[in-house]
Image 1 (cartoon, helix red, strand yellow):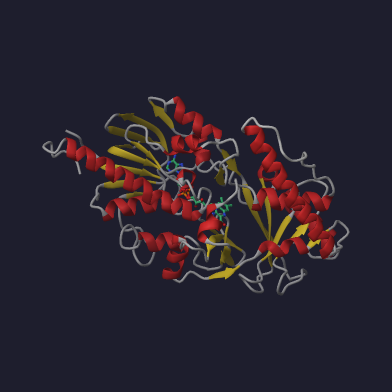
Image 2 (cartoon, protein in one colour):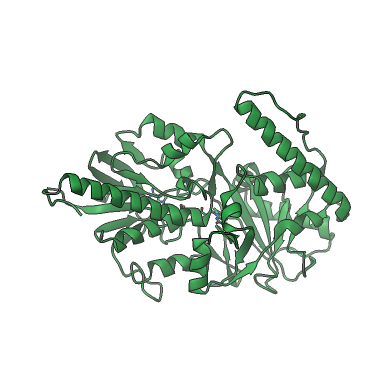
Length: 449
Ligand code: FAD
């Protein structure tokens, strides 16, 4: 006879918690959640900075106001999460050159429109190449001037990072809200887990949730899973829900025995992981413009992505004197490998270019390290243009008793908080369906569930 739990969930991010909740609500009470860190939330994570908390992971609820409601927006409304409307389309009118001059808005608009046309041409040409047909449009041009590079950066690393059309915006809506709540974005998870894993005052009250449990080995057969953690604990179950990030799946943190099949590992390695880093800087006083239309500004440098995208936090936290600069991919990896002092020096020299030599030094800096975090290995998944529906199906498909969950398994909303949330629900529903079928087949055994 089998001893152990029905289900082990690896990871207590929004996907793992939503998966566990659906299981518990459907009568699967004997589950265990193993989380590598000392907290729940995963990439929804606040950190103390100066005298307040800032969101070093997910910061926005994206996709609001459309034909379909965003479940995370609904959760936020129910739990009274404080948010503020955020519109970074104004960034293109606040582009500074290295001598501190703002590009005139007509010039910026022209450059922006040209870049959009260019990007669309590039997408069409790539698509044509992919399908082996000759390109219909003239080749796209390569951005070279600082203003073109800055616009190219916001277009490609932000707006068009995903293959269009983006279901988050087409289905859930164009609006975006910045979470600005001292209790943190992760309050949503606490609310979800309240009365289930966590008490009203945020204490873990349920020993099914186990923190500081780093899973290193997964042994599986057709109908049983054994998991070993770094501190040599062994857990058995009938099923496993694996909600670790795509970056972790691409790394060697967890070994599988037998190895995962080739179709699975190939699909996992085909998808991209984006590194996205929000660097927080706190100053003794404000020296940047504030008021309507100023929240976002760009720095046009001859190196693409070099401290390009800036945001002030006046709307979220008035008088906090905090600026945030966002880096991506190679620039993120570069700053992760240097000291925070060096990063501070670089950031301040960009600000001195924009606002003059007399601006003060920052009193605090916070540089999140998502790439070097072995429980993340990046910020979120991205499906490259050449990825097919088949790749997506393979990333998500179960292997024996192992069910895969997490934002990267969400067909419509990968990369987002709501993608993680919905993927947990989908995965648990698929698992419950599997157990129902199994029960039907062995209706007389009475072994399980
Ligand atoms: P995770 O939250 O990563 O949960 C997986 C859990 O597994 C983690 O807690 C991890 O510690 C744990 N784990 C990993 N390895 C092991 C192991 N071996 N053993 C046990 N546990 C393990 N989304 C938005 O919608 N809006 C945004 O503005 C936004 N901005 C972002 C900015 C940044 C910097 C980042 C990093 C992400 C951002 N996202 C944003 C994406 C969003 O945060 C994620 O899509 C979502 O939180 C993923 O949830 P998840 O449950 O799939 O994964």
